[in-house]
Image (cartoon, rainbow, N blue to C red):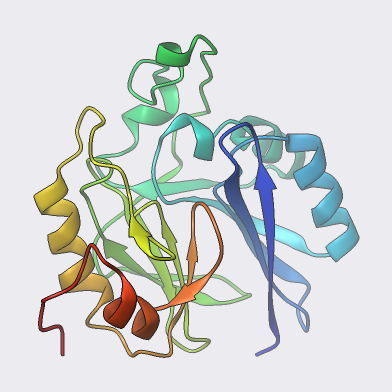
Length: 215
């Protein structure tokens, strides 16, 4: 396949929104449209693909603030992990009310479960259940392309915060060790903030993950 990835850094928290599309079919998905909806819509127009769905790794406000506009523009479904869906519609749960700028998104159209394969005309993505940063965060793995959209679970040289309501450091580490570090070293990780990395680089260099045996 000829899959393309475009990262857009959006909003005051500099979250990564990803456009992921197939150049041959001109179909794709929008992952974590966190803010700056007009900019996201312009980027989709320039990339000249038709979005098939909005994929949400987790429901914190900096990953969902542009969901409403993207959904309204393209009339496409919202997919999120089972157990995370209430954060879309509650400014308290998605933490936006705590920063004085309450935002919500439409309800989810489909709830995703661990190891589920979500098939689109552009690609097929494996769902990995990776809670810890949020109660039911998920990652999206394109096994064929070797790409992992890992939200706020794993970053370049770091890991997600675990001081929010519903967070757990121990659970986050378990999710990373059992779901991400068991993947091949060459898998490219596209995180919710900051630059991309690889599973192998984080296995060796991430100071939060040192000392484990993840083979």
